Length: 159
Image 1 (spheres, one colour):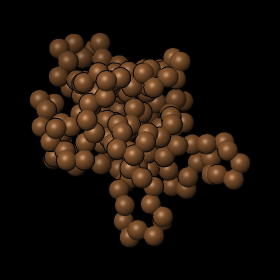
Image 2 (tube, rainbow, N blue to C red; image 1 turned 180 degrees about the vertical axis):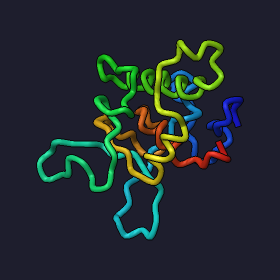
Image 3 (cartoon, rainbow, N blue to C red; image 1 turned 135 degrees about the horizontal axis):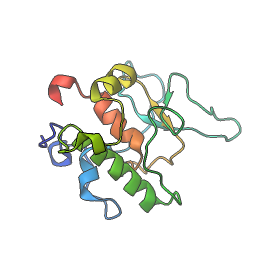
């Protein structure tokens, strides 16, 4: 466990190796990609899904919750040019914001964002949808939705 009470990447057997494009602090909360199932599973873990506008594909998968800009779940740190490096930086900044908000020496300077309890209450067990491209299998997911997934699906007593 990290000092903030979150599970670190080194403690999780399925965690990705550190990426050279992302700051190390983000790795503890960035989840590895999870391949989509065929829908016949009795139960599967919630995952991040990509919204799309391609013909013949669902724009918003059934049951998924959109967590992008314009919602209270949006990342306050933009990826300005939408490059992999910028997405990794924005996700890392978001992970650092959530990890340090409860221990920050000047909480009035921390960007307001829903609490971990609110994240769990509203997002636990749901797929989270974003426009960010999905990573290759086994690669870190440089999207703030992966940070939200990690928090939402970790019981409060384990956090």
